[in-house]
Length: 200
Image 1: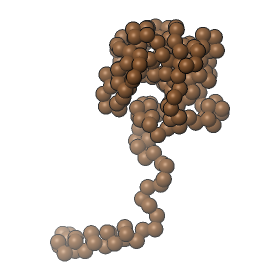
Image 2 (image 1 turned 90 degrees about the vertical axis):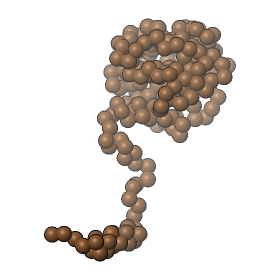
Image 3 (image 1 turned 180 degrees about the vertical axis):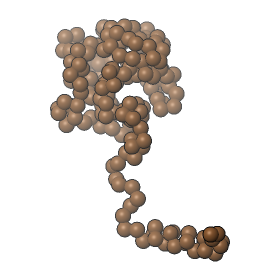
Image 4 (image 1 turned 30 degrees about the horizontal axis):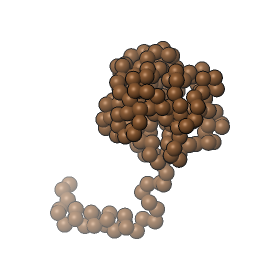
């Protein structure tokens, strides 16, 4: 059965009027609808790449939002000082001379190697490592990235060199830790006290 143009137009007008009268919004506040169409890994990487409006989740840190093996993390730099200047900074800045070797903090698989492309604006040269699908670490502002996507790395392997690429005013490593939900975890809560750098 074919609808005439008039009937089609009338049906469209009726739907438009009904949408104006709808009492509730079509989308609930605070729901990440994109997450419904992604696997957890895609969601974590997307949130990792868009950290601007995420604040530290103290409840998540206190309630065990990190896998047990996070306690085995080692410092990504052998010698540095650290700085945390901005309230919404989702990681820690480790200040070190240009070219200082950056080490993987845990065993894992390299998931992202980027020169500051889409999703990583401001990070400069960046590496993201997946640790058993339960934890992700990010290393950015590198002068060089020395690993490839898909490469398996061991804790302590050199993966990059310190630099000031992207939005950086001094040579340093910006280091982030995220759990499987994409929630930022404070690296200083989990890195060993031994070898902790001096705060600047």
